[in-house]
Each structure stands twice: as C-alpha cells, then as structure tokens.
Length: 133
Ligand code: CO
Image (cartoon, rainbow, N blue to C red):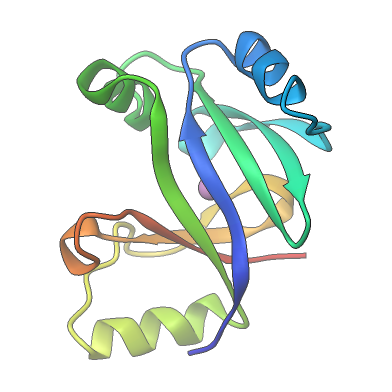
C-alpha cells in the first residue's frame, strides 16, 4: 500500500457553527460543509496547504462521535491518510494482522470511500484510510 499524503485531521466538536467561527478566527476559510449519513456526522472542511482540518459534529444521539464527545470532550478524533487504493491497502493491512474497523468501506465526505484502522494497531491513534476524488 502507498500513503499519498495526510489528507485531514478530524476534530470532534459539540457545536459546528461555533467551532467554525473559532477556526475562521485562526485565519482558515471553510471549503465545504456536508452531512455524512453513513458516519452520522455533519462535517466542515478547512484546507491548510495539502491537508485539511475536518470538524465533526454528531448528527445522531449515540453515534460514534456523540459517544466520543461524552467520554472525552471535544478534541482530536482521528487522522486521515489518503491512499492510492483502499481495497489494496485493506488487503495488505489485514494480511499483516492489522485490524480495520469496518468489514467493507463506508462512504465518506466528498464522495470518498473510507475505512479506519483500529487504534489498538496504531498505538492509540484512530487512522482513517481514504480513497477519493
Ligand atoms: Co475524517
């Protein structure tokens, strides 16, 4: 597998509008706001050079991000690597005994396909693998 770049850093927030103001105050400009039903989140993306900040607000109670917020509060939730081929990366990782969160890819923001490497395989960091336009 080949990782092309650090695509984004995902940050869990309880109020997307307020969080967007805070990141705009840092000089960032929002490029897209989108619902991602498969992950039960609403996201806002702020480009920084080759990478992006992804703010994630839960859109359903007891969703993954809602539970994360209740347990840890707001903060960094995951980092996302862009890969050439999610299928190839998943195959290589499983062959190496690395645990993925989903059995098959989910739909991510911007028409991407995503999966996550389980944090037990990455020293406590949730890593999203993203193949996308
Ligand atoms: Co993400």
